[in-house]
Each structure stands twice: as structure tokens, then as C-alpha cells.
Amino acid sequence: MRLDNRLTDGAPMRPLACERCAAEVLVRKSSWQQTSVQWSARATAVCAERDGAEGAFEGCRSLRDTIREAALLGTVEVIDGGDGDERPAGTAEATGTAGRIPEHRT
Image (tube, rainbow, N blue to C red; front, side, top):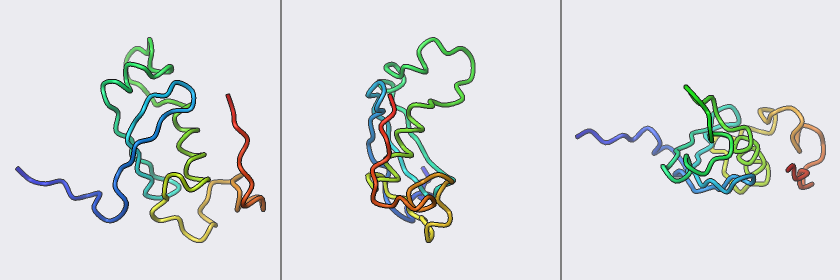
């Protein structure tokens, strides 16, 4: 058996619950452009966007928003966060609103 050590260069995956349906997944944010998500059977079963999805599942928009907000707030560490220039357009540092909590979307 070979150990998979691809994710040993920084923070481990951490639990995060979707703000919409509370599906809890494991998340690791390597950079602003790269996110790893590990779904459990329970999270798959309770995800509101996966419910009834046929064929390949492209991803959960609600969970993506939850992860983005957690990264902006520092709840989820962005391992290679750069100097702020790599943040997605419209984020706190990019818009000059650093320190302000993003609006909660429902």
C-alpha cells in the first residue's frame, strides 16, 4: 500500500457545513483557485442541490459560496493566499472593504 502524501504540504482538510443544508464535508483550500472537497455518504444524502441530480454532479453552488465566505473570513485557511492580489475579484481586499463581514446570502 502506498501512502498518498500529496496534501502534506500544509493544513489538513477540515470539516465545514454548508450554510444552506448543513451537509458537512471536509475542505482544504490550497489557493484562491484550488479547493479540495471530500464528501461523506451523509453529506451526499443531505445536500439540497444533489437531491434528485441525475448523471454527473457538477458541484453545489451553496457549498461553493459557503467555502468562499469561510476563506474570506479566515475560517478556512488559504494555504497559498498570496499577497491579496490573487483573491477573487469582488473580495474584501480587492474592493478595499477588508475587515468587513460579507453579506449573508440565503
